[in-house]
Length: 237
Image (cartoon, rainbow, N blue to C red; front, side):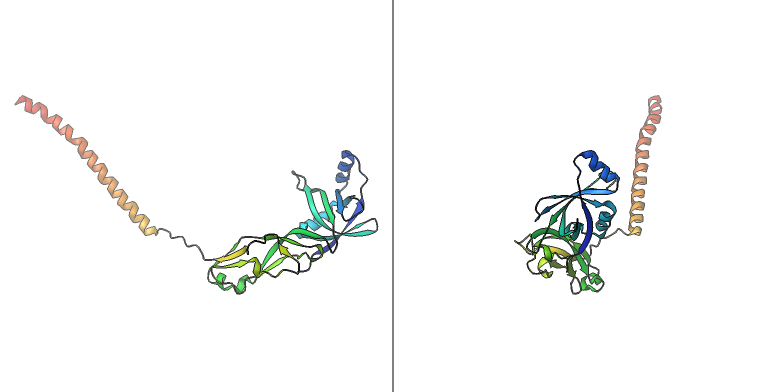
């Protein structure tokens, strides 16, 4: 569960107007800010293609990054990133400088292992994931890359709670008032379908009833015509 440390080159940004920032983006750079345990906030630029590579790794917002700026190195955590609404490309990023004593709140993904040997799943159960990520309060130097949920011995109708997942020292869930559920191995839902033969038989019976109804209607309509035909004969008598 070691934290995922990677690196990113950055330069000090001297932009003062929106047009200058726009030109930076056209030239393939993303403006940003580094704040936190530094003398003053640093305005930065990073290469867009380098930033996009980090975004593709996944879990970017909880990844500790080693940012190199003007000969200095800062361990930082991404705190905000803005995307273009039309192109979905990054257009601004904020970093927070961290140290061993810094505490942060981050969302960490849950990884499920041993699904193939899970007794409950082998019996036809379904893995119902309640939380794909868990919000943690932890020291910046102890951010886990993922939370591992072992399904190797989970039975049908068994729930997996946060207490069953091993966390690093001093790392706590932000939800502290209950042992919340991460996932369950649920029983399969069986839907009973109507047999085709039964459907055909039902359609036939309905057809017979309809035919009988039509025949009765025809007979009913025919009776007044017979009475009408007899009326002149009776009158003649």
